[in-house]
Image (cartoon, rainbow, N blue to C red; front, side, top):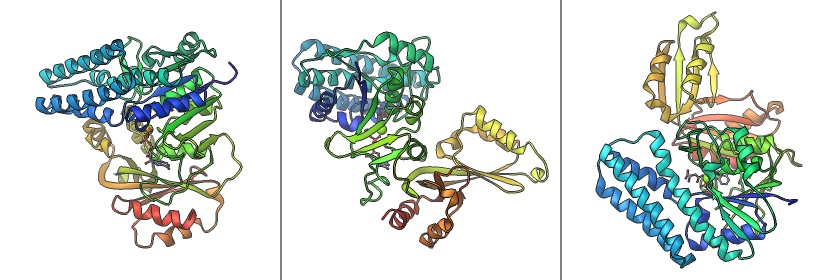
Length: 447
Ligand code: ADP
Ligand code: ASP
Ligand code: MG
């Protein structure tokens, strides 16, 4: 086959049977070779809720959530097929889920490994239903439902597994036999480790799965279908007048994803860039809207293309007078970050201190903090939002800082980072000021 399209439909595109049929119609229209789907809308959150209720001993809550999950999936099923074998398979999956949750409730604990197994039920059930939608819309094709866990091999870091690229590539090359009569349907987000245990790629990871499959099959195009018509200049939920971007470079889009634009999982573009696969982001609700193309090089390179927001940021300041006129201090700090796999977003240094922004969830890692405290005094502040201006050639623009700060007159900028990349300028503000800062900067630079 000359063109291989890999398409991914997110949770909002799997919301109900109508959304599934609409998505199947898009897959047909584009002659998608491999289509990956997320769990139905809100289901992954509900699966996490189930685990919390079960480990806290609240069985009543578990029952309620299990009922909601069943109701939602059976409602979709009844609107898509009368095939009793499919019904039996859905029932089996959901019964299996209930058994596992009962086990967690009885034990009162749930390992990361067990969590991955439990949350995988979202994608496994939605893909089963979506395959039925595909059969209905695309009767000419042999719709092959596969289990992504057989192909997407990862390490065993449950909850945020790392893909094993060589294994994925060889599994994909062996498994897929593309021809005009077949269309494959699988799950985003889930994989398996070398012992065959279920793993997941982290929240929002279906985008990343799709990019890994696209790389694995040497796709011509990767399509990400969601609930907005492409990537906008900022999250439309923050600023309603955000504009859709028709074309953006890999570098800029990667910065956006890294700095919080939820539309793409942060690592989605890494496989696409490695394999030079252009990525299209479009809306499954308005399939004829233009959407966004992400490519290696683009025609227009505006100074500020977009503004991303990363919420729930904490600022760690590590101080020690011993740093004065010495070396190795930074190395020791970053060694702790590396060993605990804590990712650093922004860093600034002074003669005796280093300030680093991290995700607030890091504050729960007691051992990590103990090790940092052995190096110096650690001051922790939380409740921040990181606002990132994403664009081009920012390191060569006289007056950029002035324009930014003129617009943030009433807002305290706690930290700022510029210099490492020509594509971004990061500003840390309190969470209360985040949206206002974005609105003002959008009006100044984008309109
Ligand atoms: P899916 O379920 O399809 O994966 P997500 O909810 O993960 O969808 O991502 C889509 C959402 O990303 C949009 O509804 C929007 O609120 C949010 N978003 C954040 N930043 C942007 C942006 N710059 N452009 C468009 N959407 C954005
Ligand atoms: N269903 C998973 C989640 O909600 C993965 C995804 O949708 O990308 O995080
Ligand atoms: Mg998503």
